[in-house]
Length: 600
Image (cartoon, rainbow, N blue to C red):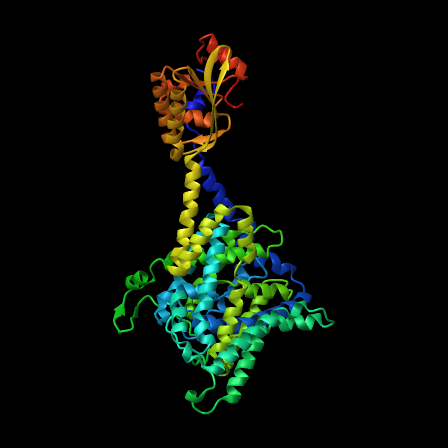
């Protein structure tokens, strides 16, 4: 028996114990500590001159976070104060565990919209969802499963983002015109809008549309060619704050004593004070006062338990990549950071949170130097909760609606959609399917639909491997020469067999030899091996012999271990000419005839 036959008949298994030992040793190293706690890397290099820059950036983001927090609390169907409760703890925790200086963790439009169908006005469901999200994301991060985000393609994320932006913006169209609405869903919101358009309140419509136009104009303010570039930049960055201040002043100055005579529809009263520290609710009561156990709450949340953590990860990692500036993003560490943010925030009555692209962009534009800027953002939100909540009771709903709609207009990835159209139009199928499913079914299941379609595309490719067949004539012998490449899995096993038999059958008995070249085959599985053995038997019935020439040792070994006598169909030579000479001489695949070993 040849030296390498031992490799054919004995599968080489990974050294699990050695790998576990190496992993355990690396967990106790200083490099692992710095990876798990990135603050240990950047804090010793922190310079005093960074402090003022981080302070300005943190306060700028904080002003935006306050207004968006109130708005997103309302989008989630919760009292607006829960948006503020969700905005501060993530800022502090991300300083310790985060890897990207620009990311600001807090409530977002997508997270608010995702949790909205499940809360039914009861904050307990949102807080529990935050706790569960934190646990799931943290566990995935510790298991180093950051690769999960690779299974969500760009067309799927673009379709989801488009649908989410349209859903969130549509949910605010009624508030923009002062119309009462009980639903923020896409279809329901527009049906309510057109069905009750005569109930439009003039003051709200003027304020809402005026604020929306002002916000869109101020977004371009930073691009104006003038001598005060710094001033116009910060005015543009603080446009949401200015819109809120204008709305509050107008409402306060035009209002009278009773709420019924308010000139605009205003937000719910914001509870003053900091949120209490308490464990997340593992039981609650429904709208009719009936007690609900932990199992009942999980059943009520349904698929959101899986989709919300997945989308949180996707948002946060995508933002980190967008602002990485050439650096490699550690997705698993970002998951650990995000998991900790959600987990600890749930003890302060938070709804699910993730990285905010809008606030992260403001952070970046403000020139933030380190994640320490998040501390100033968190402090400002805490000060707002402690001292300024009564002021925000005068925020008109039309103003908040304009802020949300203006943000959604620029959340859609218009350039990405155009690039997909130019690059490969087939990728529009998962994009359109995701967008339509999210709009007319639900955001969470729409994402799964897009992923399922992508999976079908991948499955379809795996069913048709790189397998080329052609009939040639050498030295008077008519043979079928085939080439197989890549990883060949069970999905392609039947295709491989039927294609080969059909090709030989079409030659009407003229082909007496079939050669399958396999040096570029990386691996096969047991199903493919069984089908190869069956293919050999079928070809023999057609008076045709099968030779597997110069196959990769790992792939050939699967067949040989399955059936030892199948070793005879694997031939190894230095050249194709030598192989033909051996077959013409009626040689068999003994060791003394093999001119090269399997490593070639």
